[in-house]
Image 1 (cartoon, rainbow, N blue to C red):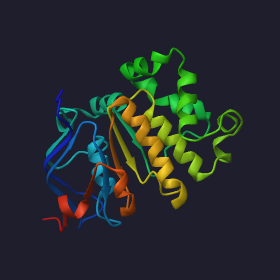
Image 2 (cartoon, rainbow, N blue to C red):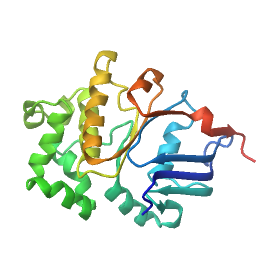
Image 3 (cartoon, helix red, strand yellow):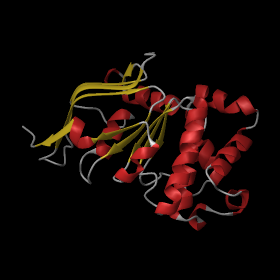
Image 4 (cartoon, helix red, strand yellow):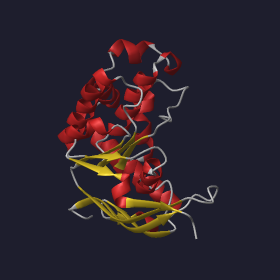
Length: 235
């Protein structure tokens, strides 16, 4: 794998089929391994679309999306799923938690599809304890994940649970879409510090998409979508 870049995007063009007038174009974007980057932009600027390309959930119509040295456009759908499970922790806007599973089981779920990530998480010797450690690190008290169902959790608690799930097994890259949107201003900085502390301990690259530019001082670098993309009418 490439020892320099965690993310390398070249000459990418993407259009949603159902949005006849929308096309996202990126000439070049590079993020180095271990960087902590804030991706900003107004609503509709393509932040979530770009993250979907980076994790392989969608493929561009043209161009190259290389993650950790692997060109995702050269993989089949099932290969991209396996690659994402092993190497990328994703925090979705809607969290994508499984309501009938416990908090601990939700955190452990990615390991079911990623043998190497499972091995990394097992270094402590006990997977439930590792899941609990991450939940506590995310500011969730043991009483919360031992006694509460997901339906009893606040949106902020669900957000923290989703981040713990993304961090389990030390994936090389974390992609988070608006992970602080449900938090008040007073707790945003503390929450991001928790994420960054966990990521730094493992040398994980962190890319967080947010409309909140006031978070910029907490990151190594800020990238505005307007600087790297064009959204134009499809040909």
